[in-house]
Image (cartoon, rainbow, N blue to C red; front, top):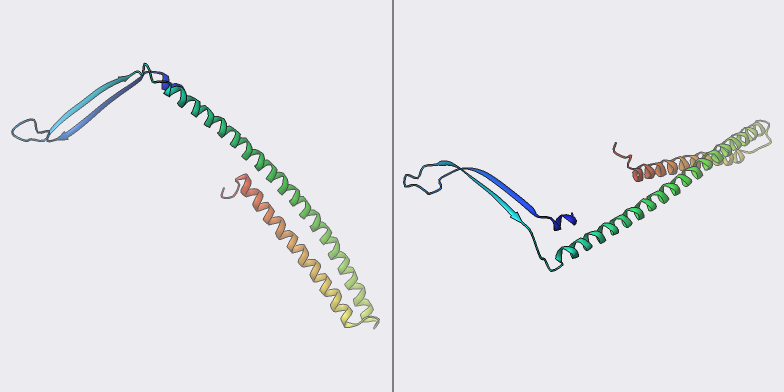
Length: 160
């Protein structure tokens, strides 16, 4: 665009009209055409085009820097989200192990209760810990899904 300021400019126009142009006494509606050609060449502009060219070049340079900054920030966000997703997956695996452990503990306490070696409170505590472990696992799943949605939003996959 900036280079086009130095070149001559040609313009052409053509129009068709159907109107009352007011050229005859009868005042009839008439069809008529108009056409024109224009040529413009700026021989001396007091360096105005050079300044415009410099401004355009600076704006292009600024836009390139801004674009690279946005790309870098996006890449960092994606990398961070992927690390957080991996952390959530590890937390889910640990929660599964905790659930298995709490299930085993509940089974042992139930056996002891059947043999009158444990109280109802022990069973209730064990069930509460198992429920807590299941809830933690669900929370980790929800956090992972939120992170995946954020990742899809950044990557532009939402709405496809």
